Image (cartoon, rainbow, N blue to C red; front, side, top):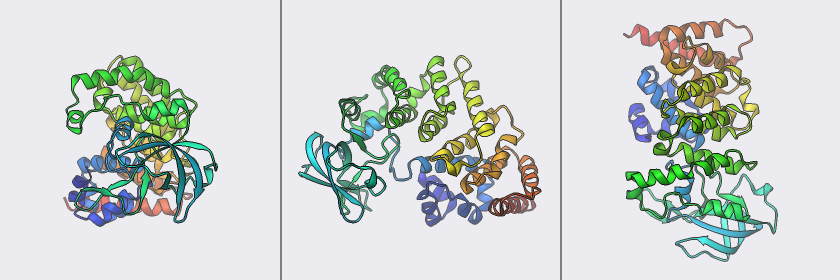
Length: 378
């Protein structure tokens, strides 16, 4: 997936810069590769790429959490939090090993800079981490920087409070102990196992625990065979979850992204169209004030515009006024994806507003200028 966009950009450095920033610093790419970014096919490809990067910027591959947790490189242990170490690392004391191919030391030193203040000394946790990493030759080796927590969709990070329910969750293997080759084949048996797990996954979306909800949403969204087999009532339950403010925005975003591939059953597609349209029409523009809200709106902006109730650009043009630079760029791209005429009208309307923030004005003027250059070069 990454190589496709990199070849199109012909600039690995700028691609890496965009992928490393979950806030979607698309503007730097668009300024450097304006003509490429005006192509509707690559607009969609680049937006989908950047949505994936925003929700899993540090993940090497997007897999359902039950598969990620079952990887042979994953270690899962119950441990007591001991103390904060140097260089943003924390130390745990091993209590019990739930899964590991490697020898687990009595004291476990793991990197976790963002949550150090939230940990309670002496409290028991479940850790899911890996002592390994890929080197530049794509070989799995012991990580010279030390062990790190798993960080991928539904597991961000691999740290839970210890409980029987959470132990059962991290050891749940929908597909059983299968090889990578067997997983890739997505056999009929695998699909049946995933479908049988659907009631439990839907129940997780109703949990009071944020981690349970994100886990369940990621497990559904990252299983194409499961998504393709959802019935009307199941899709309706997912639509209600995405439309409500109860679920974590990151989980809601992952399901909305997956909705594009969901089949039309019992009016379900029109239901997803309405969800995406309502998010664009009613969500407050100040998304930076709400954690992860931008990822949800970005998913709505990358939703195929021809499937929305309004294809005149009004839903997308509203987000040219957002306080998130990434969403301003994404809205401009979505408008160009509809048509050049729609984009030009939306840009002109926004630029005519005296109270438009200077940052937004500068970005829109840049898109408008490149649009004119592209037209003159035809």
